[in-house]
Length: 416
Image 1 (spheres, rainbow, N blue to C red):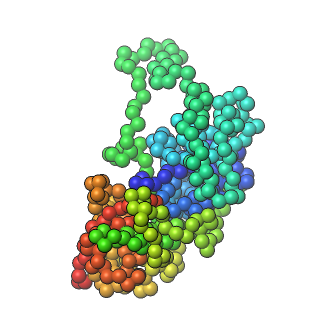
Image 2 (cartoon, rainbow, N blue to C red):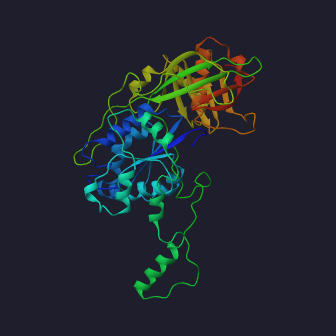
Image 3 (tube, rainbow, N blue to C red):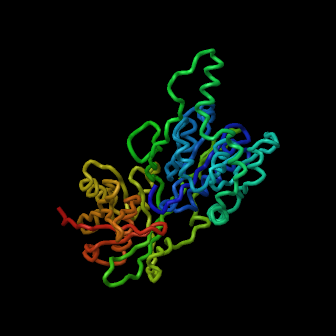
């Protein structure tokens, strides 16, 4: 997660009336809306699917159904993976009558119900109560306004009655369950205390329970940029908003709908064609000089999309400078080639052959707010496209995504 991002989790239980199996094809529309409407640097999207979905259809089939959504930035949590950490970090959950959606409501997370078969539930059950109180997803309407409405009107205690029903003995389940299991086996309990392992912060270490990293953005990106007026003594500010283009539709046999993506839009539905608003600390700044370009990862599944690229991207190349030179030669229509070389650094080859290194730097408060370094390259493209010399960035550059300012240092290497 980058600073300023919101995490939206899509959760589905199993069965023909779940969100994943809904006969009205709610999930494909939802994934399409998540892709087209939500700027990729303002929202991270995760999917948590019941293990029976993976077991019933097979991991290969599930991955095939979700592949296009993954290429557009969806993180798919594997079966038996760290769904609890994802749920704890979520800003909003779009789910169904499964237990994970219920747990989300019980811990105070805003919930939208994308599918909810009341007839399948005991009306007296806690999950049925969730269905009577939680708002419903309107799948034929733009998603972003629904999320904004959900977050604006949510109260952390909205589902207090569900929290009270989640457990009759909070914090005691390990001891109670072990006692029951050993009693059923007719064995004496171990002498050591029973406890549940802590949920470790997934940002540290390489444990099997770590939340998977965000997948590479292989879908083409439509990038909207705005240069902002700034004080003479301050570094330039460039606001960047990126939307993923659709990669086409997918389909698979009934009864489970294919969670693929639809035809490419001319503009993201529900998206405002401007960059993110100015951060709160700089209300006097005015967004000016709008621009747009297309950024495409060189490993895009549909190689024909590279012909549309103004900016060609890659990541983790062993020789990024050599790759950038070769990319500019091979993709002669593009203006720049950029390679992400570290979580905080991007190397960009500009038209005159020089290499520009953009690296995250501490802000005025000493804190570095990291985001996808490919955003830095789009900001540089916006600057260069408007005829401004890169030498004027040597004192620093501020890139704004999702209302968060990212301070960069800029170094320039002459052509080789």
